[in-house]
Amino acid sequence: MTEPTQKKAMKDLRPATRLVHGGTMRSQFGEMSEALYLTQGFAYESMEQAEGRFTGASPGFQYSRFGNPTVAMFEQRMALLEGAEAARATATGMAAVTASMLGQVRAGDHVVAAKALFGSCRFIVEDLLPTYGVECTLVDGTNLAQWKAAARPNTRTFFLESPTNPQLEIIDIRAVADIAHAAGATLVVDNVFATPMLQSPLTLGADCVVYSATKHVDGQGRVLGGCVLGSEEFIMKNIHNFLRQTGPAMSPFNAWVMLKSLETLPLRVAQQVRNAERVADFLAERGGVARVLYPWRKDHPQHELAKRQMTGGGTVVVLEVDGGKAGAFRFGNALQIVKISNNLGDAKSILTHPATTTHQRIAQPAREAMGITEGMLRLSVGLEDIEDLIDDLKGASAAV
Ligand SMILES: *Cc1c(COP(=O)(O)O)cnc(C)c1O
Image (tube, rainbow, N blue to C red; front, top):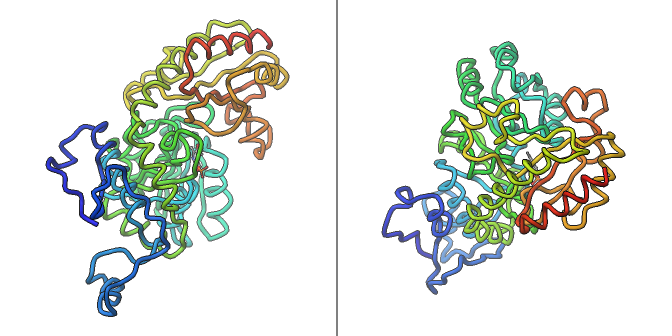
């Protein structure tokens, strides 16, 4: 196994190049495609070497829960993409979110989070943390005064997603980071909806970024995975040991799939964004569709903020159809190409009805307060030919 032998430092290269070459560690065979080290552990050449690995005196791998060459290549490539000093891969996106919270807090601490969260993220901050003596305050993430008012002397961290799922609300990351830091807290951003291609929370002041790599990073609906990124200091202090000892490690196989996927991430996201823009503009003109939400459209309530902190509108379009749940179901059931499922960021376009699936657990009044109506549909736009997608959506909107 050789260390990366790049002639030019990866940091000097642009993102697309980093995503093809970054993090590669070749074995003695000089393989072109990154090797899959599907192994639980590693043999030592001597008792002394084994001892050295455990004390840290001898660098190298010990056990795949702690580290694995294929997983390390994925982590290195993700860190290069995000512009982060350090990255740790996890088995799922939720393992990354959980580590980013539990790794930082102690009993008696306090956390502030935006209300509009992915269902499982909301469970972590609202239901799980309090059982360990960590209080949580939920705020309207778009209201900076609420973030400021919620901070207390024992507030350890702030948590948000932007754009939010599924309302596509945009939260001002730089402003919330400033409020967090003034209160002596950190800011963690779940950047799944923006993707690492369209928004860089660390450069906007966040201390930690988390991903479900299940979404755009794999982007082809095959494997689960997650990633936590931040400064070397943040990761070593809060995340490194937590993950090693509690064990939500990414499988080397999944890391290998993700590594290869990263090579095409910029191409896929760029095309999906182009398709999403077309889909949003098309749906906005259709009868039966009461409202379209897409951050790059001028009628999005936070269009200006989106333009400031993102470099594209994303791959998800949200629409509200006439006729509530019945209208939404008629729309979905008329689709021929778009699949009904709950992933996003996939090459295949996917329609989700949040009120009856991803956000079903939340009681209707709270759901409505979050802006999730019965007629709301989330459309993750894929890589199909745009004309076929438009035809499919034409049929679905006519069925409403
Ligand atoms: C999917 C998702 C997660 C969870 O990721 P898994 O890989 O399913 O565990 C977390 N946050 C957001 C915003 C997501 O979309």
